[in-house]
Every structure is written in structure tokens, then in C-alpha cells.
Image 1: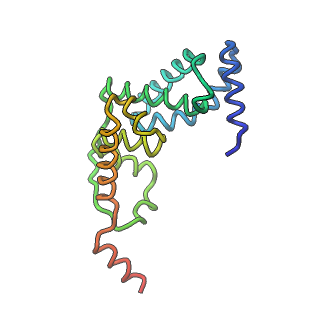
Image 2: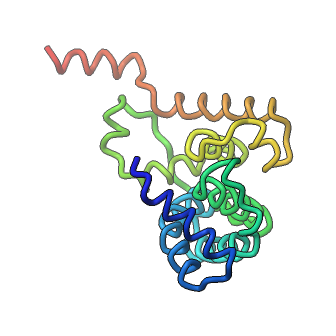
Image 3: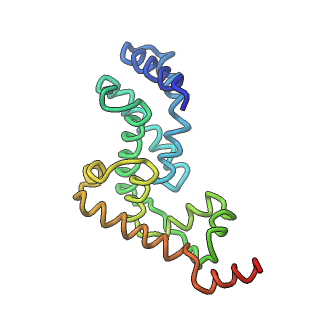
Length: 189
């Protein structure tokens, strides 16, 4: 990974601490694509996601003095704030939109290869909310179970259980069945 953006982010954080508008703008422009992606994994509605993103940046700039480079990178720190805002707002607004998508068992990994990311997200959104949230926080955002527990006010053990259930849910929908495997072997011969 290129260390230039990381160094730039650190430079801009220091400028933000001094109240420099140019540093705030540069940090915002550096982080916004990354944080928008993180927020959209939790807030499905695009208008609500933009509201959450705006609130996340308000909190980031309000708490810039609390950033500690010893505890992690700027992007990790900012993502944690954005995800916390998304989770809080998601609960408050009850905006976890469940779609009426019928999930059919696929015939193998090629189903995932042919699926657009948005289609995959629509299917994953049909997963129970508590499992979906832990799956995202752990596998996508990279938080450990202790951090997830703090964020969701659950125990680390409950976080592990929800992740296990989420993985089982995914396997049930995407692992090939015995028929699908036999069919695939027939096509090869």
C-alpha cells in the first residue's frame, strides 16, 4: 500500500488540529470515498447514508484532538466513528430496509462471480440484522469481537455467535448442492 495517503492524512490531521480550513478540506476529500463505502454497508438508503456521512464528519472534526496515531491510522479512526454513527442512526431511524428478494440456492461459486456487488448486497440485506451487522463489522471493517461488543453493547461471545450464524446463513445460500456439483462435473466431460 502506498504510504503517501497515510502521511498526507497525518499531515492534514495536524492542520485540522490547528484549525486550518485547507487541511479540513483535504482530509474530507481524502476520507469521503472510503467512509461513504463503509457507511453504505450499514445504511441502505442513499439519502440517509449521506446524512450519516455528514454527521460522521462533524464528529471527526469535533474530535480531531482525540486522534492518537499510536492507536491506529487516520482512516481506521475515522471509519470507526462513521460506522458508530451509522449503527446509531440505523437503530434510531429503524432504516434497515428489508427487501422482498427471494433468495434461491445457487449452483456454485460462479453465481457469486456473475452477481453484481449491488445484487450481492441486496441478498445479504435479507440476512437477520444482528448477524449482518456483525458480519460487516468483522469481515469487511476488520473489527475484532471485543470492539464489536463495545460498539453494539453486546458481549464478545455473542458477537462470535452472531458471526457463526451469519457464516452459516451465507453457506446455506451460496454453497453448491450435491446436484449442482454433479451437474458441473457432467458439463466438464
